[in-house]
Amino acid sequence: MSRGVQCFTSATFAYLDRARVLGETLRRFHPDWTLSLCLPDEEPPGFKFDIANEAFHRIVRLSELDIPDLTRWIFDHDIVELCTAVKGPMLCKLLDEGAEKVVYLDPDIALFDELTPVVSLLDHYNVVLTPHQIGPDQDLTAIMDNEIGSLKHGIYNLGFLAVAGTLEGRRFAGWWRDRLLRFCFDDIPNGLFTDQRWCDHAPVFFDGVHILRDPGYNVASWNLSRRPITIEEDGTIRAAGHVLRFFHFTKVTNVGEIMLERYAGGRIEVFELLKWYRRRLSVNAVPGLPGSWWAYDHFSNGTKIVREHRIAYRNSAALRGRYPDPFEAGPRIFGR
Image (cartoon, rainbow, N blue to C red; front, side, top):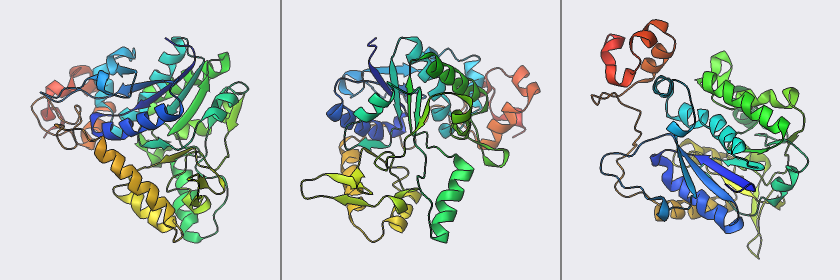
């Protein structure tokens, strides 16, 4: 494996169109980077997936991540929890294989300029994080949406993460992996929001953690109020006057679009980006994939698994001991 920059994302087949857009934009600006797709999913019957036709250099399956008690562990998580929980093991895998620098990007991100400054930062720092907000809002609604939102979901948006293959970078990766293996749940009342809340500790627990405050990185609905998008005559796209490096198109088909409209400030530029992104999603659509497919959302008999099943199973030593494969055991073990 190349010891240079390793980039990876985590996505199910339902998000493959988004991951493809990430891949094509990454290749445009960084054709020398290696891009891996961590795949917390399995193909539906009859579905053909050929990496030769993809922008990824490598596909990594859950079975390759050395996760203990894998079947139980998968069942413990819903789709968002699982897609984020694998990020720690995947990060450690790449570092263990000799990667000097690792960049994680969410599948619903698209690059609009190169990320060379991040690579340079990893010459001097062990970890690079981007905060959701880099300046306070003034409007009460924005404070409630954005600042209080960060208090619930975490100060840093883990749609982006960069880690150096230093001793301290590897120490961070091992700590984050261990926390995600045990505690990657959407449980805001108990202080957890998948992988993000853990990294609130990172600048205190580890040396050389750089907080990247450049407004051109990780622009999204939750910070658009402070990062207005402009497009110059030569086509350069800027956020708050800085070159737009990448935009995070989170949930653009529902609540994300509502938030973009709320904080666009009457400007149309962000909707030009959205229009472009939707065109790319259409081009990269996945034919033959059943709607909302995820291999782990149903028992072996076809019954859908609800969130209450997962919570009950992960909190019951008796159920875990009696039913090592809850997918095969079925909903009867929950009295339904």
